[in-house]
Length: 246
Image (cartoon, rainbow, N blue to C red; front, side):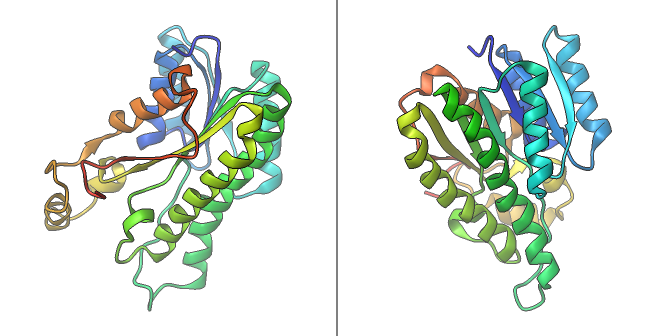
């Protein structure tokens, strides 16, 4: 389904990013696995892809850094000979109630989750515009749609990703580039495993399907949007949340 394609997955060493990187590789894409602080995890993902006969390489970069994102993009294109798919997954949380949240906590999350998405889209789109094709997939969150107590920074960043997605979709459509977003709900990752049992139970009570999703659920949607099967879809938000946001 993705044979001959090259994909860059930011935050590809853990959680949803890991699942997406492995899924794209399973469908035939060569994968550039970006990481910021989890080198061993990223290398583990790349090694798994290589052992299964695929192509992969890891790239250290803090996407919150505009220039570093530019250099990473250029290096990926140089190493793989092109770039067809960008998945913006890198993200952090610094949860706190609004009245207690520091400016640093707010800025750190916005700089990575929202500005980081802008940075990679800005640099990758310049290349995709020249080749007149490309797939950009931004990982947002149900928090960006519904809001979530204690996550003013995270919800704002993920809501911003949705606006960025729709605007970019309009700007890039004439050149054959599609831009879509996925908004996961509660998914079984390292981030949700640390939640207290009562918090997990409270979350499940808000999910019509009654349970957390799996990273693979999000990865399958990403693979679909990255494929030619989604050629006529752009500017859309796909909620993979067990019905939570309906």
